[in-house]
Length: 354
Ligand SMILES: Cc1cc2nc3c(=O)[nH]c(=O)nc-3n(C[C@H](O)[C@H](O)[C@H](O)COP(=O)(O)O)c2cc1C
Image 1 (cartoon, rainbow, N blue to C red):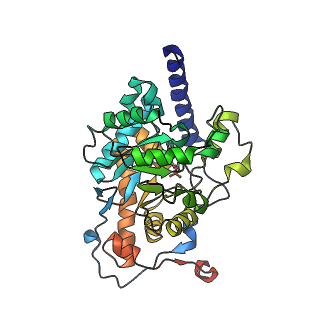
Image 2 (spheres, protein in one colour):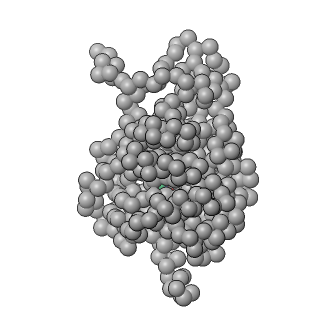
Image 3 (spheres, rainbow, N blue to C red):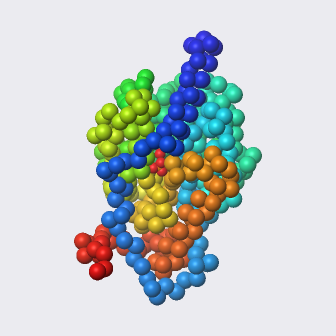
């Protein structure tokens, strides 16, 4: 590709990012008929808790990094000027809270050094676990050295690879050839100088995908399940201005189910629960179902555009709700929470008191 066509690709990528952001801010991008499934479970409330709220410790370790709470900012964006604001505001909030952060796809910075600036958050967040990002369809042997250099340039600690066949199939000119991608993922995970995490983008990694991951030397899986933002819906809105294939927009493995299936198939695999995680209580349930940490993306978009304080406010509220959940369950740390049973609600327990 010559430099002019390179630039054209980069600017069309940046403008697509902006259309995604616009759809996520203003469009009907949530699943309409599918839920995460967390609402079917009830935390075991304990009125005789012996804990003091202030001494609940949410600290945990993920990918070798110490986090003050088991929470990551979900992967969102990069490339456009607005993306720089979003990433920097989120990074500042993450640093203050001692949580981790995933960046959006770095594909754009592989072709354009200028785009690097939008991923430049290390100076604002020197201590956080920072995770870079690339699409599985873009992973190739020739890309590896460029990708490692890109991670080095922004001071990332790990790489998330997103597997998104449904999103790409809905995208105008999407990358729709995933043949050989498992083999390329295997090679990347084995050779890459950073830990590699595999994620979806909201349609879920469930039992079928987890089976294929047996023996692949990845460091973690983010199930990114259905029930929150549907990227098959986002792409249709961006491409057609409407949802033309509603069944496809509603397709995926709901987050709670994805979590249970991946945990059962890959018992020792570090797991991120994401996709429709909206409250500290969702996070508590996800941790009890086997997640090591949780991540949330779209709820952070509008506050991240507003200011670092607005992003901090939402994330702080989320973390404090999780803290109250541990207190109300009668436990003082995340390991103790994980050891409690989480029961599905019966019809009787969900009925309103009359
Ligand atoms: C504006 C926006 C941009 C996103 N861009 C990326 C991306 O570049 N790479 C990626 O892996 N996921 C991306 N995602 C997907 C999220 O990381 C997440 O998997 C998905 O939105 C489901 O989580 P949610 O329901 O909390 O939004 C993006 C999400 C949003 C809202």
